[in-house]
Image 1 (cartoon, one colour):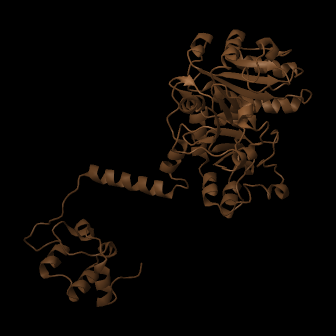
Image 2 (cartoon, rainbow, N blue to C red; image 1 turned 180 degrees about the vertical axis):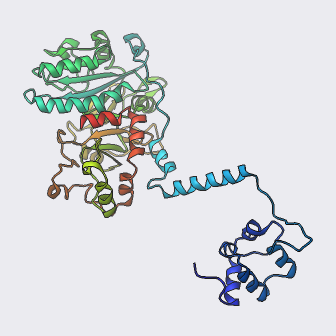
Image 3 (cartoon, helix red, strand yellow; image 1 turned 90 degrees about the vertical axis):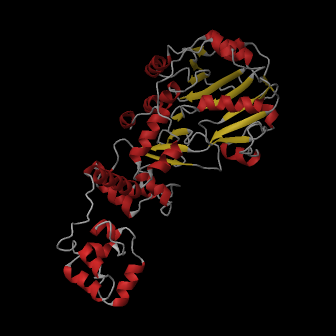
Length: 460
């Protein structure tokens, strides 16, 4: 800083904006005149004499500034070392927090950290699930119609084991049924690996079939054997499945979609069932209307860097080994113009069914256009689509070359990737900040989905 001792007017201006505590902190507690901290740091004899020459301090004040008179004891207060240590610690914390690319407080609010806690024990049985007047089925497809693509199947199996399976094992409620449908002609090595992953959990069903019936036992009055047809049930308690099928025609029925390379928030099942009780039940019994749910925000996993190539991002990438993150990259955002596949749930109460909605088939981008949005303040509203704003992010999606849909997938081809929806957002400061908060994102992914960074590195 330039010297503050230029002229009288400058001194007056400096004193007028001074910190009231600067003089006391620098020269003792009994000095009542105020000088700026810059003056306090420049406490040379010449500078102080200049201030006195300009008439800013009385003689008594001058003695205090110079340490007191000959017979006067110093008035300086000795501050305990613990106070100095505390102040220094607080200062360092403030500097670190304010300079973080993504403030920790804001990030934790976005993730709604509740702590991972113990993994729930999967003890759902036919008896315990019948105590609820809700039947909740999660539907997943794996390599249907692609039985001959062995290498693609192995890559997708690695993503299934890394993202999808851990999130279902970590669900805070176990009152649901998970049906994973595979091609009946799938390679035996892939089938045996899937059986090993799912067996021992009686509400996890691995079914060999290329059919994907919707509505479970609600769409038509047909026997359970007709529902299965020629499908092969490889894992799960068939009695539990048959009981749930029979109850789904009269209970609240929830049907959730989940791709094999995606995952759901650990509180997803519990939150859906609690919200359905408010909207699709009255006095503890199902009512006729329907309601749809989709996640409000998603986390995406990318093997290649999805962030805009700004100068700061490129500089950080050059410091990495091989120019890329070994575990891949995470990015979180919300797209209000679409209902993504993971977490899309159709809920029916009473006698409502898919026909009640009025549309036989709806693409993800059509749902928000053709069905009105639920009022955020009204948990009882029906015949609308609701977003799960209490689960942020509500789902994780793996965007890789194995994805059926290639939206936002980074290929590694610089020419092609320039048109990518994420790469083109070079002016989005919030998006770019996430690049420098990858450790925070991985921590949140582990706590909310039980997905480990080391497993993602192996899958990549």
